[in-house]
Amino acid sequence: MKLIRNLMTAAGLGLALFGLAPAQAQTPPTVKVGTIFPLSGGAGPQGQHVTQAIQAMAAVINESGGVLGRRIEIVSRDDESTPAVGVSRATELVSSGVAVIIEGWNSPVTLAMQPVIARAGVLDITAVSKADPILSGEGNPLAVRLNSSNSQDGAVIANYIAKVVKAKRVAFLTENDAYGNGAQESIEGELKKLGYAYEKVAEEKFPFAQADFRVALTNVCAANPDITVAINANEGLGMPAIIRQAKQSRLPGALVAAVGTVAPSVIDVAGDAAHGLVSADIYFPAVEPFVSNPANQRFVAKTQELFKYTSTRPTSSWRWAPPRCRYGRWPPTSSRRWTARRSPSASAAAASRAR
Figure 1 (cartoon, helix red, strand yellow):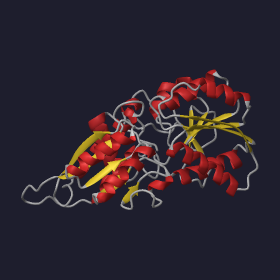
Figure 2 (spheres, rainbow, N blue to C red):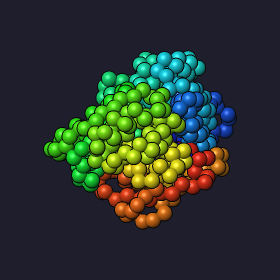
Figure 3 (tube, rainbow, N blue to C red):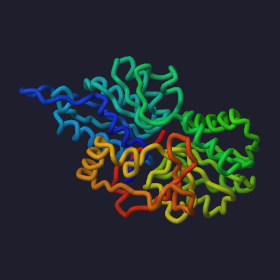
Figure 4 (cartoon, rainbow, N blue to C red):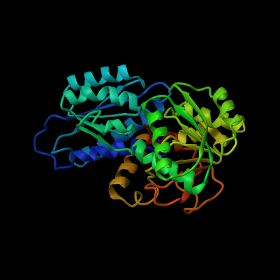
């Protein structure tokens, strides 16, 4: 998230799963909570935001007496958005005796780490990674996920394509990994369930680290789509690049970013090219039902204190309007959208999001 949107916030709130209790008379050992996220590379800023969210919620819990009187100690590791590195970091944390691991920005990394965490019998809280196998029995049976899944997201995007814009010519720009391919399959599967007739006029696949999409966009433009769905978890480089280059390429039709892939940092980098971009997410700290929730209020206040976080509030009521960035409300029971403007301080906030 910056706007703590993407579930990075949810990752922090997930610490509340441990429960609160009054402090005991003597000082017991800490509860070690491991975190594994990308802290460097293209997804580094987002991974740092997740970690900050967790640190903020840990501070809230510690100030309330900790977990059964024990303070939470956060032990952070950088997975570098690389499965092999993630496995190494998970092994390190398990060996250090952590009670729980909160992980997961990239689905391939999460899926690689899960067997290590499962064999150790450690509770595995997946904060952001979205691939369906994470909770379908192909990954860790001890896993808990805080974010929406590819299947849930697919229903949102399919509903938008079929019932809102009623697009007949659909193109995909898809990250070629467990997250991206799974997300596209879910969208297409949901369109099939709806019995919606459309033509897939273009499909371009790319690796996570790619930042130049001009050739792919040239091919998509030539197909003249009514709507292009961009599925890219690299919010530090990839998604802003797609948005800017799509505008430069004069991409026809609407550009829709996959659910949870547009942190305010993406809008900051993409600038005016983000006008009209459509996306969705599941958490906005400054709107209901979150803004009046006491736990959310404590969490946001602590994030403001520690990391100078400032919520980005809607600039209007729920409505259709020429937007700077339109977000769909969750769950997908309504087609209402809200218009968000960039806050100068948004870049300093913890964000939630992704994959």
